[in-house]
Length: 315
Image 1 (cartoon, rainbow, N blue to C red):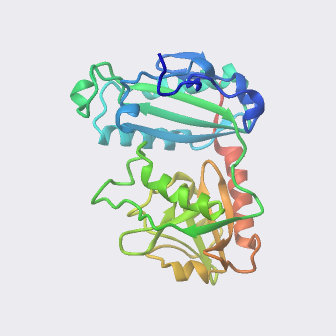
Image 2 (cartoon, helix red, strand yellow):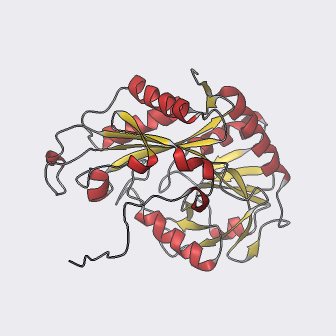
């Protein structure tokens, strides 16, 4: 009998030469309560992440035998899962043990990124209600060999037509897996042939990009949008603290696109990409069109802190 996907093996995994880093072809992934090969790393079709994007997540990075800001990320994971009323959440010690076990199984002590996901877990029947979730949460630790994802020489952005969620609709302070708002903006960036898209809030002020927080340097002042319609990122907080330690005036306020177009420097922040200089927004060159001196300084300071302050791996 012919199926809807005749000729397409939906269970086939990617081969090493199809991956950005071929070392990831044989990684072990933590799913539920055990490690499995990536070919066997699956969740149920009844899992809440499949049914409605009902999950929370964190991104972690490993530097020279340390995980940077591990407890800060686990604090946010706990806050997000509590806000969404998850039941049967693993203890912090259990989550850390799963992270360490995954990294050790893969021999990862540096140049690795972890996608840590906690779903509401499998349902007894398909449907929206959390009352159908009776087995507790499902923990996924996906560690990959992955360097920062953006070009260190700088990136280009456009402004998306899609607006960032406000707390009136879905509070961005919940680090949830329902990412369609961001994905729609990323599609616009892909079509435009640029790296990412700036997303505005419902009042037309800059919020963040589809994947990162964003900063502007204007006349020596380090500025970033209020975290009203964007995630108050952990890397964002580290950079603000670094700026204050350097004696820079720092501020969080409403910022318009015009203020970003005419900034001396612009950069984005996030665990996946660290600090990424922005060379262009909507065809407008930013500053001199190259990596700015303050961006370069903060990027170096961030890397130094990440190398020295992370939680040591126990292996």
